[in-house]
Image 1: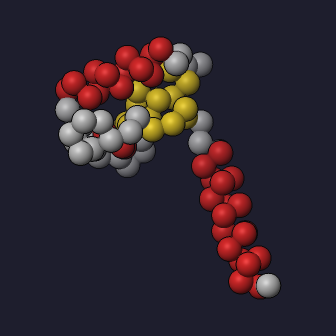
Image 2: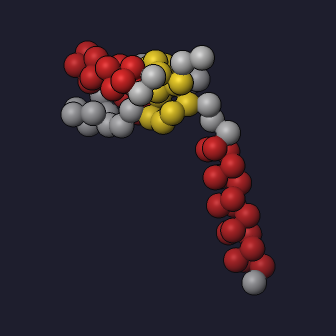
Image 3: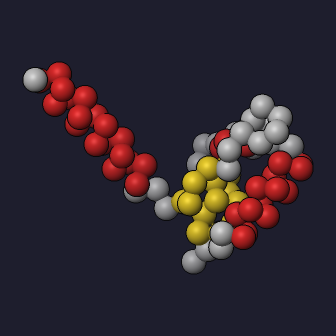
Length: 75
């Protein structure tokens, strides 16, 4: 019972932390195993703009990794 409660609490905390983010989601792994190539960044930027956002490197993100970018909603 105690273990189930702890797991449930951890899942809820993770859900709250993810929900608190102000972005519209990551851009995925692209076509090159997660390496941020020019073409992948161009495609991700276009898809993000179509959703009404802009592509932004996440805090402490590595510019060479596509999954470190997110589509953030324009204000």
